[in-house]
Length: 80
Image 1 (cartoon, rainbow, N blue to C red):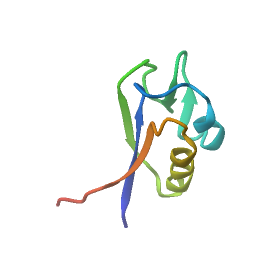
Image 2: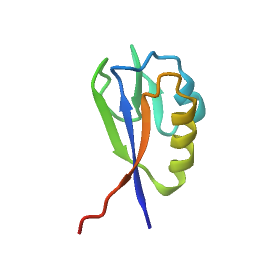
Image 3: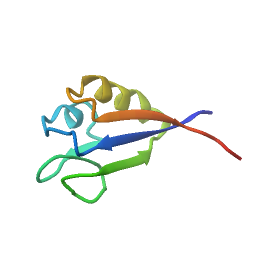
Image 4: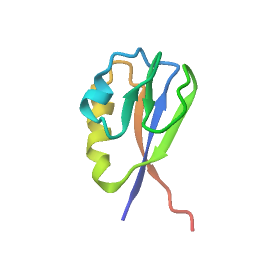
């Protein structure tokens, strides 16, 4: 089974709130910008985490809706 991760670029995030409205199990609004749920609230940098299989479609929908393309869903390579 393929594994995926979500990557949030907080440097380009404009805090529009679309990602937590689509995928509240993955994204939340911090004090300044969006965060991945459970991650430290920082205004800049990159956040990433592995997605559960049932979260992938929601993360992709949020990625497609993000007006600044700050969200990416990437396949995790299995180099074992």
